[in-house]
Image (tube, rainbow, N blue to C red; front, side, top):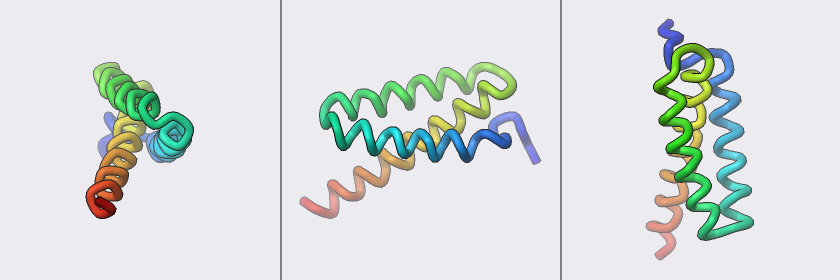
Length: 79
């Protein structure tokens, strides 16, 4: 298995990113959106570094994208 991007901490970080995205968006609509985008950007920057930081960044990006995609589908189906 290729462990450059995915490691033992990646699923846990992805779950934490999705959970924090829900909390941030539920409490702060406009600012929550900005926090999710900042998490996505921060995770993307972490992917540039080697080792466990890259795995953590991958988890953050995956969690943020899952939340953003799910929320976009929710918005588009409830218009």
